[in-house]
Figure 1 (cartoon, rainbow, N blue to C red):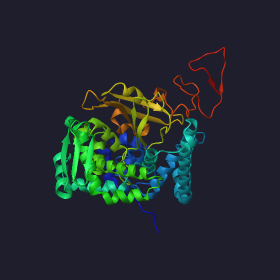
Figure 2: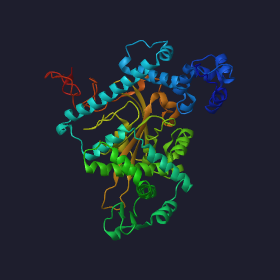
Figure 3: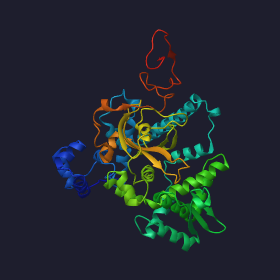
Figure 4: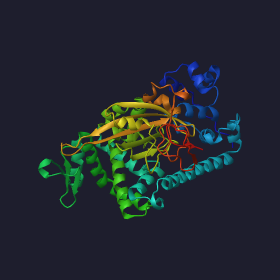
Amino acid sequence: MGRHRLFAGAELRALRRRVGLGQAAMAVRLGLSVSYLSQLENDDRPITAAVSEALARTFPLDWSAEQVDAGALRLAAMREVMADPLFADLDFPEGLHRAVEQQPGLADRFIRLHAAYRQAEERRQIADDAIASDVPGGGRLPWEEVRDWFHQAGNYAGPLDEAAEALAAELGAEPLSEALIEGRLKMVHGVDTVSAGEEAGSPPLRRFDRARGLLTLDRAMPAETRRFFLAHQLALLEFADAIAGVTAGADLRSAEARRLLSVGLANYAAGALLMPYGRFREMARMLRHDIDRLRRRFGVSFEQACHRLSTLQRAGQRGIPFFFCRVDMAGNITKRHSATRLQFARFGGACPLWIVHEAVAIPDRILVQLAETPDGVRYVQMAKGLVKPSGSYARAPRRYAVALGCEVEQARDFIYADGLDVANASAATPIGISCRLCPRADCDQRAFPPADRAIAIDPDLRDVVPYRVL
């Protein structure tokens, strides 16, 4: 059987115009000659696997998986594997695309082996983190089990996401208004919505009386939070069977963890309902992931928009691989997910050099940072301090910060990278996961020595820390 030949000159030309490049600039980006690019655009030559891979790598949000054949996807995966700092001392094979074409089975096995290695390293890191932080038996609390379940799922729940997108299309408004959601709750599920304030004592943010069909919301909450809780209640009722099915199939140890997962899945579906996948991804690309513009467009909070960006993991329609976290005033990571190679500490504090810690103390201001982890991977991240009002002087407001970032290769599609010198490796702040796991020996911000390294103490010599890491 002959090999499939891909002619996509019109798509290639449309892509070039969409990103605002002339043929010469486009050729430079792809590593091609101008004449070869012209032949591709005029369908005089087919797009090879190597060219498709270059397009997917250079324009990850614009060259969709449907346009890339299996060989190009395999080659892209192999290039990502070979970019791992684990192989930094190896010469990059010039004929990699030819090797992948000639030995596809071997390439697939190598890619799976590397994925298994990454998973094993992550599990080892969890164990090391637990041991170094004196967590008894390395046991996980129910909320930690649920947090790790979402991480293993890639922070994407396909059936719920698709069902929420279909319901949003049926409701037919952008953004979804409170009145529209309340109307659906009343007409389809017989649920009335009321607000409670100080006269009710100290009401919870949300309370649902199933017997009476009554949803009570705290009057003091911001409009975005109120809309989210309405969407949460609608998701619980509309997608009850789907949520129950996912929960039943989850490998969780306790009933508490399963109940927490059900709540988490309803929250996920609420975000997917307010920010439908296809439309949200399209707008995120168009606005270069400008959070403030996205949140206004969809009527959500800054944190909700950041979190939603970290869930865009649908096969064939992926968004930028982001990491996302929320950090409180004490430095605790209370929400996290990473679709990048960066992982977060599960126990103990995070690296003090992350910009997110500074952002907690400076609310309503966006900070940006170019950072590099010990494995040599560089990231662009933005962080913003947020204050969630309590509605009463007697109750302190919640103060925390959120951070969103991507690997430097995606910087051109991330508006917050515009003022950073991403090409200058020396401009990156050297960060780690946590002090107990970070191998850097010369960090002035170190709080603890690394758990797997010996230290030397000289009573006649004192530097920033009173020991030297060996």
